[in-house]
Length: 334
Image 1 (cartoon, one colour):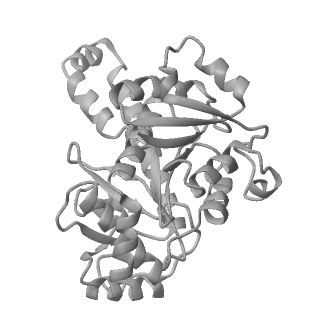
Image 2 (cartoon, one colour):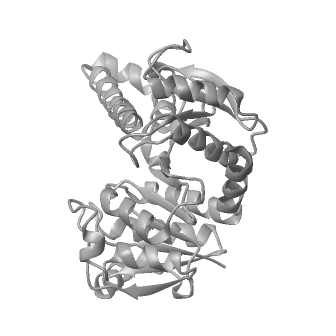
């Protein structure tokens, strides 16, 4: 039975969506046990009448909470917080993975100081999945916010780690890697872009496509996109906002009058498909690549659907012994 620790506190929506996700997840998968970390009374109240098999979880009580608005220093100031204790459970091999929807700054601090990075990795990275125009096909993009700045070596490491994930988890034989830049030409970008381009080009463990412009992120051109954390975070949030607003505009235009409403009825399936393809809740989580253990971060505003996809990603990483395979690849490819 694989054990996953969930930081139950500090999210925007509280415990209810996590509990709703657990109810679905434990019925679908029989090989996962959960350690629910946080205020015992609050967790028990959230579980009340949910009819989740008690043999599939245990509660680990903590007395402190790191709020969504609090930063990295709270990891030291609140040693009995749910986030810190969850990370410690993972670091001490009491669980195989740690999941949180809490403060990103505190999460990064806990991952760095408590769990630690693999040898050869100076900067870990957040890697979410971005939906593309091809139904059922996503592109992996990293980093999207674990770092404000990265150098060329970091980007090569990101490409190596994501390549391992694509091969091991997604069964892609030779996943293609693109470097996010302002143009396709090798001469484009800052100095570290140009240096990274050359390093990626000659690395035999990476199938390098070349530069990818932001407008092509969702075009299904490559399997993996590497970028610095600041640029990646801006790109990710722009895409999420654009998808949400596009659906709002479509709804607005299709309900302007009775004639459009009638026409819209015949297009319901098509619009449902578009909405499902670009629904960020299907890809609300990001693996923290480069750590010694499996750690996954989800949005603070994640609903039950988002939490289910987060737990599924976590389970896949565990059962495929993903971290050890990354470690081996880094030793080969750096």
